[in-house]
Image 1 (tube, protein in one colour):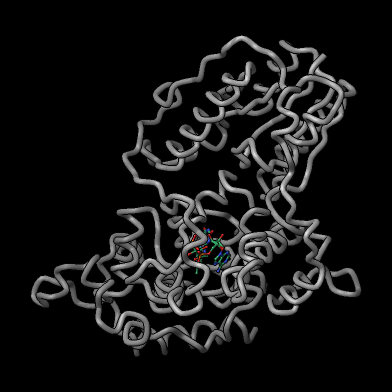
Image 2 (tube, rainbow, N blue to C red):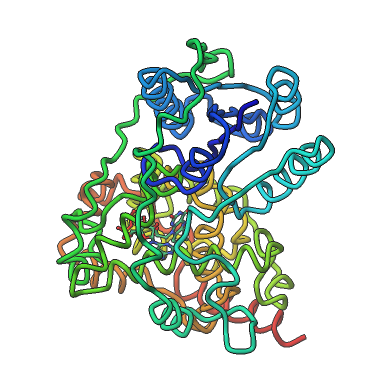
Length: 432
Ligand code: FAD
């Protein structure tokens, strides 16, 4: 009789809540990972860098677990089928895993919980991805916060060192199931090729002190680039919060709280994954001009700050937060293109793509979200450039032809005209 620990977006052995609980249980623990065909088949790019990143993290776990005399059982298929085969091959006492809050993941887990229940196998899931999950930081009346600042205050008032203490997995690794080596399915077999993308490291600590001064300047590396590691759990949120809490300036920690805020919002309001948080905004009559959308995707709008951002995204899988805000505002307000088109494009390209934060960021920019600025506040790309890239360093890096006006495309829309059109469209939708 064995227990199973199921890895999903928590790809590390250290400080892993579900793994710790599994190892502390009665039975030896076999670790499992499933390359989910339902997710992989939807990816458009065969060299999707995130698949390579996950693959490398899985190889690393596989090696580490084999060195410990155990293994990582890696399957490729639809989760239900994969579980049927695991249940067939092993005599299972209990299954352990960590909570996953995205709508797709919640549905998947319900199905797995059901088949386990039919066999009277407990499905134990733990909080690991966040410090506080959806019902831990709520208003006095028990309802969720829908505005960040009061949420953040309550978050801090609840924080005690207990919540960011690491789970000491290392002390229990002798409870791993002793297993013969197992093979990994190849990337090719799953229809992918290795990406040559250079993945960011986990050097978050070096940015914390100056973060409040540097975080808005896209030309310098003033932010941590740790988003990818948070997405796949190759770093523990408790470790980050513990480190950040030790610094006097809490600006960076506040960003980690934004992450939890959006995760909490998506968990409570799953419909906002593709609907406006403020329903009236679903009535906006978008222009949805496909040629302009294409120009935006390619970084050829004739607005250099927008183009620089899109080119950074296309080339590296990263875009600076300030520029994400500018380019999202430009798409939804200046081009009057449905924010969901932009959200899907970011989802395809961002290494750190996180449904909750991406939808949150896009709805913020489109004005339809929780904390959104009033719709009549529309970013002016040139004014944003003067403020945040005054020496045009970021622009020159990503749009070298900007220096030669004859080579650089003309604006695909006039900002003053677009601003006026946007105000009319938003007003009409909200007046009904
Ligand atoms: P740092 O500035 O070093 O911050 C550290 C961590 O805090 C980030 O990795 C992230 O986990 C969290 N964080 C920071 N800012 C925010 C924020 N505004 N909202 C939520 N969490 C935040 N973030 C994502 O993680 N995934 C996304 O898919 C995503 N899409 C976005 C789309 C738009 C339109 C906008 C405006 C923002 C989006 N963000 C997203 C938020 C933010 O831009 C990124 O988290 C940040 O740029 C990542 O860079 P970093 O890792 O260097 O972050």
